[in-house]
Image (cartoon, rainbow, N blue to C red):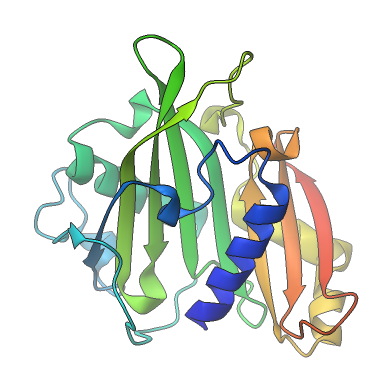
Length: 233
């Protein structure tokens, strides 16, 4: 199942990335660390310093077993990312610009999301580059990861950031609206053998709108993707 997610993420980002000079995935970063977590207790045990719930080590884990089904909402991933950010860099997540956020789930579990990704950036002192960071959360497989120490050229007009205060439609609400507009029919026609990804990415999409994609697991299907655009406010 994890392999399916990563395949969807890689293809999707490779096609839609506005240029190579921007983070594509957690693998885009020069320094990567990961930690195992207990998805059944992590949200309730988060605290400000987070030192008792994370044990970060270099690189990404290999062949982690499936732990438990997860149907978290946007705020759950935001809270977890905030704690990871503080532990990894001892800085406030609010001091950085949010570049992109993405959530994924299998079509048989559209009530919430089984994993999430956040990417951030900040101007360097000379305003010629961005310092970029990323956070990947895979609670179904019991791990989280962060990436950093990576810089990208700052374009003339800069990157477009997400202002969470202006996002009044959550990722799960965007998914519910996509379901009502035809997503439910699409996944049912595929017997729920598909993946859903919900992303907000102003720089890549050229608009401040949720994109909800349904991906048929059958790669031979010529109509394997159904797309909906849902306003973020």
